[in-house]
Length: 306
Ligand code: PPS
Image 1: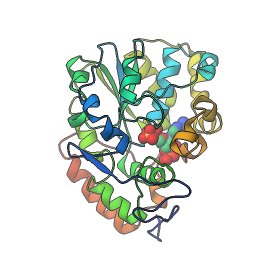
Image 2: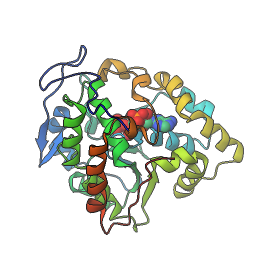
Image 3: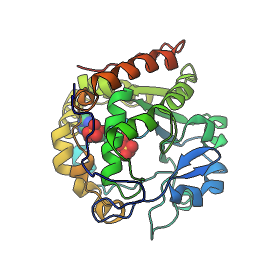
């Protein structure tokens, strides 16, 4: 466990810039902290009309969304990794509009069905039509200690998020839900409360790390697909951490110009347990009290090391 307590990779203060990027101030939409671009589209997001054959990938930030979107794409291509490699990725984030691009909601409205749409908001703030139309939702969950660490680092290199302050400051804000997209606890409890609905499916980041082939098989069944053992083997190789770290820039060729980071930065460490390099003993004790307290009665249990 870390003894130093305060990591300062970007060493930033409120209102300053990290590296060459101007950092936005956080803004509120209906009581939820969001990015300024999200606020501009907030009414359109709330009234967004999901189609019954849409599939949503719903995650709290840094829980493995991009990994799962790639998994989903290869499964939909029936395991054809060659076809996957040449597909340029379309970012269908409902809440994220990229400057100088068509607003996200408009772009998604114009996509042909069946669509795959990514969302980060908790269930209290998602468009009502998603649940009303019983759309398929794939929820990806990750233990909160590693999420906090990953989110902290993401704040230091993304020009879409505010300055995180020091690690201690960020962790404190994370624990009380004073970060973009709000409380991790509210997010996971909200989606988990819907777990008995047949259209809601759960993936856990740690289980994907442990046995991606098995988790891919579960997801394929949920999506009504059946992949050959050979296709499954190719999928697992393609979506390993090292392969994604090396190959993803080609999938998202323009990502750096709009977000301020490259995929090599984004696919950062990909570990279960990196929190041990950041949390002090005292910080860990606080989290170890908070987690069971917050998750009491939910049956949710997370893995913190493999
Ligand atoms: S975001 O910005 O909220 O959409 O981020 P998200 O994609 O949800 O999460 C980013 C973290 O997922 C890790 N990642 C992976 N881990 C293991 N294997 C693979 N293939 C993989 N792909 C992405 C990524 O490295 C981020 O975690 P950290 O801990 O920061 O490395």
